[in-house]
Image (tube, rainbow, N blue to C red; front, side, top):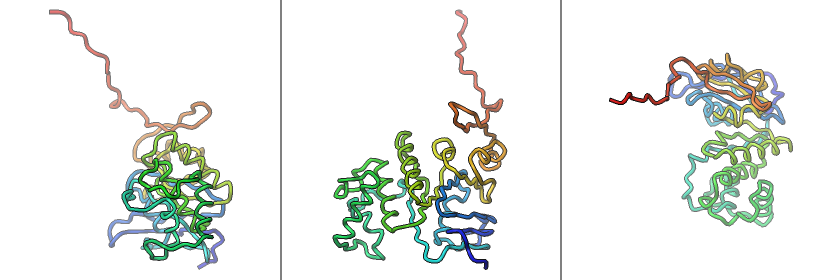
Length: 265
């Protein structure tokens, strides 16, 4: 196997569960230092499975995932899948990233300062003693991003980081990820949010079991690639200097909502 020059690479990666129909087929992806990559596709397209395979949590059926020796990675799950009633504070949640199998790790003064530093970096100053369930959706997302950063990860994977968040909070998360990336963090995320996230990323990979297209948004988020990815016609419009993806209307989609006025008897 050739020596890897990227941080991570998937080579002709195929993944299936229990010998069933492949979830991923011949996926090629190279992740270099400083990348900010968005993986887009419909539900069931294999986005989360690709992240799991890159993290080493799912074995390849065919092909391979190669990782630079000693590479440190972090993972931020979907906030909707987290049990927010678990009795843990913000600081404890972050420190558990270094638990190494312990439910509630003991940390010293130096690590407490590290926790405070990473929380401050993400705008969570003074929230260390708060219960995670008492935070807003955006704050909860930042806590789990802080947890990933606390592992001193060089690459962070995020599964649908803006799912369930309102428009304002989605923009805040996007700007935060952009700032972290500019500071040198390599980021790979999945999203179904074409307009709120994908159009703003430097690199987009369209996935539907296989890679349909990869590159800059202006080259990839085009009607032909989007239709192959999502299985329905889409249009790409320009609005206020920004690209906007919308469903392409068909004759069957047009409904006359004008009220019919009956003639008086």
